[in-house]
Length: 186
View (cartoon, rainbow, N blue to C red):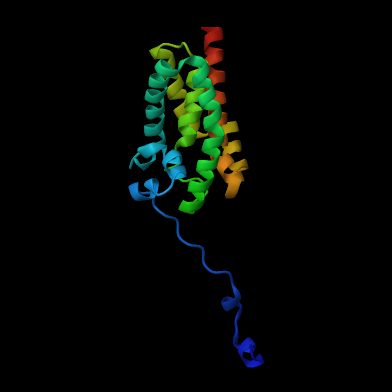
């Protein structure tokens, strides 16, 4: 560059480019990558209202079906494998949507509610409904430790992918704690 050109450059011309705007997840976006399919809960994350609740209901139905086919031990192994799979899928999908924790990413609700259901088995319908309501409360309201986990691990990259799962893991723990206390005192 010639010195005259350098002199005309302003601070604004040297600034970093504006970040790209976030994307809105669509069916086409979901189908464009296997990670998107997983993170968006095979379509439940595309629900226009309350995608987390829709995904949790779907997780409950899927758990009931899987429990019949796989049994307790294999279902536990599936859940253990679903956690790192979800970490990867949430990381990739959040990056591609350009949002740290998009509402459309619902794999965290699915796998964490599976953890709850797996650990309360053989709870009946009422026990599972109580688990569902408690889990949705802790996930949506984010009291105390759930809010801490949600804020502590926010970000992008692998940390952000873990952060998407972390607050739901804490919500699952809180749900199980309340259910255990309820069983102890009831």
